[in-house]
Length: 39
Image 1: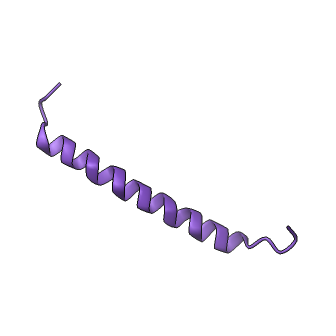
Image 2: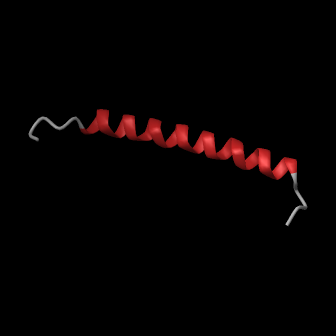
């Protein structure tokens, strides 16, 4: 792996993390707004 593209790998990894956070974040927001006081 001499020609390992560190910058490309970091960019792709960051993109995946952002997408996952958006997906989980939006579901968390829906749950909180849907039932804020529901224990």
